[in-house]
Length: 64
Image (cartoon, rainbow, N blue to C red; front, side):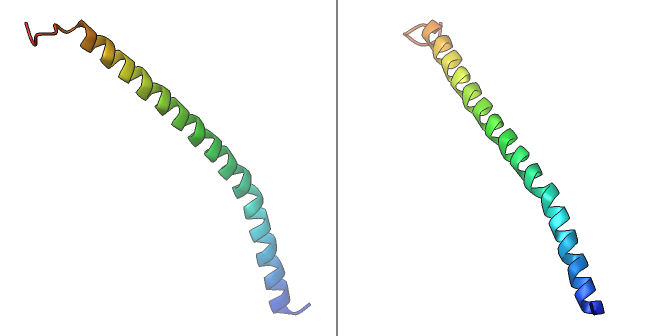
C-alpha cells in the first residue's frame, strides 16, 4: 500500500467512525425536537383556552 493509499484508508476510517457517532446523535436530536414541537402545540392550545375563558368573564358591554 502506498502512502497515499494509507492516508486515504485512514481518512475513510475516520469518516466512518465520525458518522457512526453523528447518525444516532442526529436521530436523538430530531426526536427531542419533535417532542418539543408537540409541547409547544399543547402549550399554545392551553393558552388559547385560558384566553377564551378570561374573555368570557369580561363584561359584555365593555370595561366596568
